[in-house]
Length: 69
Image (tube, rainbow, N blue to C red; front, side):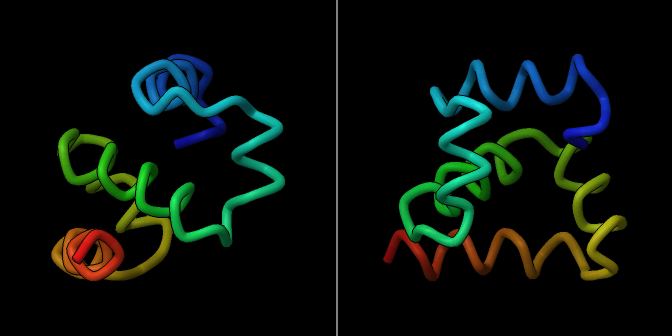
């Protein structure tokens, strides 16, 4: 998803993250929750990310729910 400029720009724009914040804080719970929230709300990128990670999309949505519970 981040390899595609348009998709990356959309992610950054809608999450409010910057490339530096994303790069430096991807293991941070808040940053990860923001990325997963974005994916949960945008099915095309959810499917793309799930495919790249070789996990079912539902697993990414469940991870978002766990982080925000």
